[in-house]
Image (tube, rainbow, N blue to C red; front, side, top):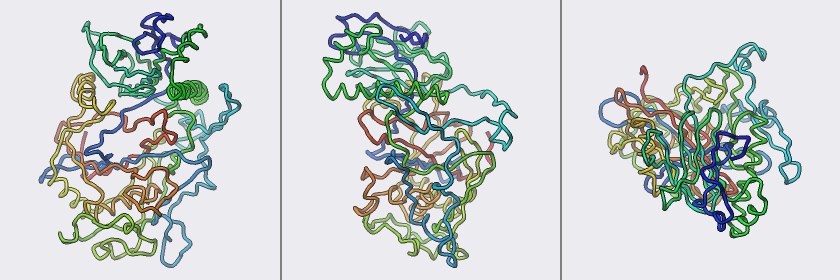
Length: 512
């Protein structure tokens, strides 16, 4: 193990015979920590989900509605994709009025700092978020307050496989058991992750030979990323070159990208004090992010997707069958089922109020009307509920890895129930998506199947939003802390990943 990370312990001493050809089974060391990953979402019926929440004819105890959006990296200059309604006028009498309080061209995030570094590829520059002094979150001068240590010590653990072979990641209960519990299987030059705590122990094995331990990872506070690299032999350039020579060109390019990202991660950690979660190099984030400079800070958005105040008849609530080309609504076009919406205003004003600055959390009051909540609950009541889950590794090992992950936590970590509602299920659900797009300043066409002339420069044809997930909780049920995002593949230039979650509570007055 690298001496800078004494807790990353080698399992076996690497030798020339072990490393030619290189393979995870050849032994090696547990990688240095630097980079982290969380599980990719499971896709029901081959599609990526979204989230929301009911489940029975009787009112559920707690029904959060989650809208999960994937983020793509952007071109070298920032690109913002406002929804059609987000470019509309704020009032009929003032066609030039802005549709929201954000102005990214003149209002950049003050906490972005430019880091300059050279990791062997020449001078490079990177704009990194550096968390400011906690006192500024209260609108006070730096140094006025001291950040409290959180009681909850949960963290992410990411394991990067820098070998050309598949490996398995196990949780070690450290109770004398000969075998641990399978967390996930990890492909060549890929990564998997889980929620974990300082003091947890994991180990890596050959995929086909679980008894052959390759490396051990002891989770340390503040360190989320651990690399398994059987290619590099510390202090022996000759053996390292020999290991590299047996790689194919594709394998070498993927390995080299991980090496470069790892080197960058060291610079990033020195600059920001935390691990780099993505894969370097990558382009700038494509989508807009609302600022959260201080508690109570407010932003506003005006959307033409006004609320339903009367329930449309059943014949009007059938699934949307319009082709992708016919889904686009111009700024001045009437909204779907306008006659059942609020007749008092052509716009709905939404306010985002900062509850947390790091991570960014916003409260949006009155996002849904009572009629819309009633409709969503009715759709959920007619759907079959399943036990809530999250994923941890490759799809073919999802169930086994998930069950073991629950056992690792000492109990089932997901005791709620959920079901899914597609955007096309009804015009009301479609309106919720369009309103969410305006709130997040995203082109609503990116949240559905779209025509060829819609967002033609976007790098992917599929939609970037999950289906609406309806989550139902009875008393005592829970959906414990987990990381609601994953990590892009090493050979994906766009590094697509989830960047925002819109959580809608369909009940009020809960406790717990």
